[in-house]
Length: 225
Ligand code: 5RP
Picture 1 (cartoon, rainbow, N blue to C red):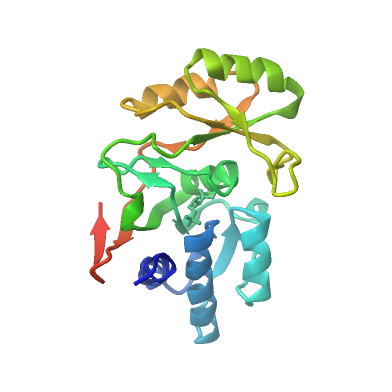
Picture 2: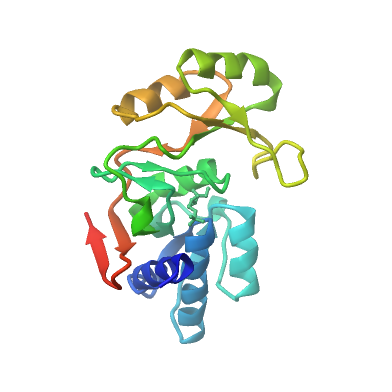
């Protein structure tokens, strides 16, 4: 089974947890893509939901596929959000933001009664940190902020778009990808990063995960809670 098939299987399993009447948060990325597709199929089969999205990409896909869509400012809470991750540790803390949507993803996760993470087994790690930690920063303060990230040991690199220009998030900000090495205390790093004034947020998701649906190469699916 290839990586895409593994992603699809985890995504489709989580999409079965959606029930009539729910407000659903849609994640971003190649795994969340499969969840959105399956949710759209279920809507066509009669499932009645409304959705909000964690990125313009996912919003566009949801609308194209006919999923009833509302803006975040029309709702007060989300029943269930399904999203991917770049790394999941043994305590179900996450690194997210490889797709650049970490801020909106964290907003949705924080507003959700249940935040379900869908991954293939390659994303499961004992300790976070092999994947560079994305940090969303305000362009106005790039130099000062990169200096502060260096002081914290993050070795930041500004993310570039395919054309070579700086990658711009849906919120008009930039991403500094940071290498902290093994992140043994993610809660403390999260707090220190978010104390830097021009850091909008970072890709550490601490204590937000309700469940992880992980698909294994042997074809099995494991639910971690
Ligand atoms: C986007 C994300 C994604 O969920 C994360 O990067 C995983 O992506 P993929 O499912 O494509 O591996 O956080 O900002």
